[in-house]
Image (cartoon, rainbow over all chains, first blue to last red):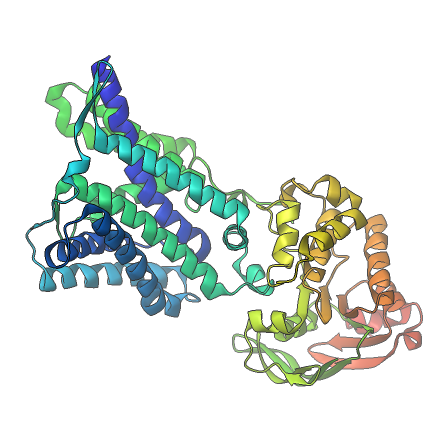
Length: 298
Length: 234
């Protein structure tokens, strides 16, 4: 019972982290058609901001959390303004190469201005405690992560359903030019998408820092790669698909680790990708592909 | 109201419209007729700012040069585009809200309700995904969406395209109603007869040039236009 509950929570918290990052990727892709591979460096920027503010200003965790969120939103908006706005009308490949370029530049900036070695920032470690709920030992960080992700997705859903800008963003995912023909400014819609993406990166950064206690130049790369796979699995451009893909990957990772014998532990990641490949055989466009990809009537 | 002079429209390096002059007086309905590839939709694209163009476009005396798509909309130009382009992933109500997105007055909900009661079928399906509507319902929705911004001029691009004859009659009845309500309309159509019937003035385009223009009465029932529309002359 204890073991099963722990593994369930493991799967939920892994899935939550992937979902947070995947939705950040998907919201930008749905509007701009841009796979923002620099998203991982936005997460790392949050980590470095935490390290700097934690050392120079204050170690207060609440202030640091605010600093991480503000840093991630700001750098995300800055990247949109400086790097991605100029290639918005260009071919999709140009956007992809720009994202890779921005990612490499930022990683090297972190190497030059910071260090290739991990820089310690342990102020969020307190989030990770062992709690006893009934007979079950669970990690408080995993509970925070799961609950925060669910709350963030609910708020995002409310925003997209209820506000003018949210409705415009959903409309833009279908026909961006028509949204502009309704008088809604393209820059505003795209900047909002990047701000939301940055905010979600900031939330993910807080949980990653709570788990790692240190920041490195490449810390965002692996989670973003996994989130990218989650997006593909769920159906690229679909926000519910990104959430679903994230949680499926979380459950797959934990499930494979639990089911595989210890001697085959090294094959865990290969087994996960095998299942992902089989799922994509079944649904080549992802599980929840937006309807446009399948052809609407006019 | 809308004055166009020396308009050339480009798609990449190709010049699709070769310097045309069009005038749309306030409160009138002007039809732009012509065969496929004549430059009708390109002209509308130039007006809305979605195509590269040279020449002069003035709305109520204001030169639109340099204004982007959003600013032209805010200046009072609204379009119900070819292919309808409703937001299929939004509900009927949300599509209408998009039409009023730039308005700041308090009458938006009232105006949306007015349109929903004007088209009862849309009212019944207000919470339904717009992608599930029939072609005719989508056309009504796209016209209502375009009008919810309270534009100075309404551009209608092929509103009858792909619709059943009965529905085409309803669409043109709506255009007729709008004209009587004083709306300024620039109508692009291939259905010459129906367009001439609702229009005050007609321009015929062929190969990117105005080949003929005059009051709609001069064009009879439109059957004589077949030569200009098809580019085949006796």
